[in-house]
Amino acid sequence: MVRLLNNFTRVCKTTEEGEEICSCDYRVNLYDCPHSEFYVLMGKILIALCTLATIMSGAFLFYLIKIKKQPFFLNNSRGRGWLRPRPLHSYHLIVFTYMFFEGLHLILLINESYPNIIAAEIGNVMINVCTGAISILYPISIVYSTPNIRNDYEQSNIRNFSNELNPRMVDAIGIILFLQPIISWLPLASLTGHYAELNDIEMANTLFMAHYLAYVFWEIMYIMVLAYFWFRLMSVIKNHLMVLEQHDSNKKQVRGIKRGTKNLTIPVMAIFFGLLLQSIIYVIMSFTYRNKSIYYFVYNVSYYWMEFVSFPLLGIGIESALIYNTFMNLRKPTHSTGLFSSSSTHSKSNIVNSLNSNVMDDHTASKFSVIASPTVIHCSETIEIQISK
Image (cartoon, rainbow, N blue to C red; front, side, top):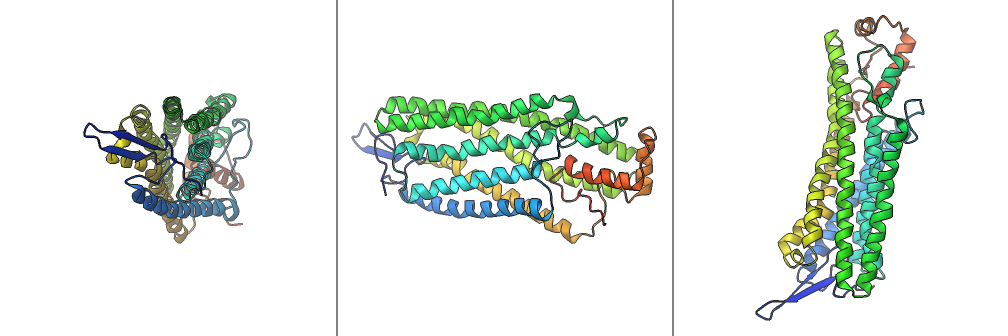
């Protein structure tokens, strides 16, 4: 075990009364500070939570891919680019990655297993590097979630924004946001640890500030991309619901789509508001943490909560909600509740008539309903089509 103690990991100052006040940089050191017991206890609790969330998200991925037979990537088509993941699969992978690396980092911190400050800084930043790189799959999955509606119903009034966006542009955005954490966060964290090892505290603090501002820059870009793609998808779903309601479609279909939309909204809102709040905290933290707020336990607890506590709690909460919805839907009788249900002749004929009399036989309608459902709202267990062979 190596105790990482120097003027960077354990910051001290002398007050006007001559009293020395010391505080740990909880990111890379938990010991020899007034509140070490608190950080160690919280770390052990978080390890348990991260382990639970890792198991839940991993089990959900296994359920979707192996049991539900839903591949991680959508089928290749003309309207899709190279990156074409499914929304729910992407979300569970994000949760799995974040929880795994945070739990690993906390285990190494508590057991003092990092050989030096550089390794500790890398271990800390890897939580965000890996999660940030993978998380770009989620907004891209929203872009490609409705390509087949337009392909099968070209005369429909439903606009398909995935065909309006250049797949190469979408892939380029994804690759840029994927690479930025790797080429900026990782080197900045490594250099921070390097200068901390050399005891060049001023340079280490400067690099720390640049490191967290790089976080903020990426998070703002990600939030903008996610919000844009999300609102475009919601407009497609809203227009489609209007078509169904205008033609007196099966009310179960409409309710199923609305439930599925809500099921997809939960992860989107969690990511959006979580990153928005985190970016605000990181701006404050980048300018004040190393030279001012680190000496105040209340501020440190707030930062610690945002960096290590909030996302495990949020991840477990949403995973639990999705698991609950899944089991509740499994208990219901199976019936077609897709965007275009092959089991409702009245609903199907109304929709077909509204689409300039595009004729489909039962087999074609059933086949399309299977395609449309998982590609429009993949995380909706209530919208999935189950066709008996």
